[in-house]
Image (cartoon, rainbow, N blue to C red; front, side):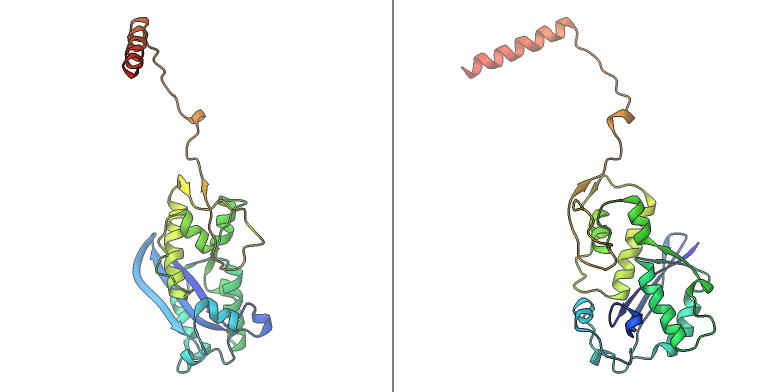
Length: 234
């Protein structure tokens, strides 16, 4: 199985408002193993970057002065992802932007699903952890994925974190998760979230316990020992 963990950074929240992609980061997994193959590029958006978006990813328009336009990297990107399953957190966001870019350049096959299948890890997380926060930050805490080096959002950084979260989510259970706060809103952004919740792997009903009762002699010896200890304390 070939999977591509994908993330993008953009100039704002909606392609309907004319916002564009400024960074794409992809990491390849084959049979759930990192292959070391990546696709990563910065892209000149041909428009200004919203201040709120810049505060999230830390990328300014000046940083992209020499970056290629999307049309210049589109075929290389599609070659990398074609035939794979794309694993994306809040896939509607990233897929919407990618298809917008492909349509702007007049690509004959602008629908991402014409090139690859898509798995949305946000939808998966909501099914696995209903009523809890399921942003990438929250999932990193829940599955104990180290995100301490992530000062700002970045497409390649977030793809690496998502790959590790995805493998943990689909590879087993966790007994202790950091996520006690109830989910707020639709969780469609990549906000920083935290909390504490304990997820039980086994309940008492699942366990077959053997109870061995003490004999009368053992009980008497136990009582005598307790009385001796009590007398010593006086």
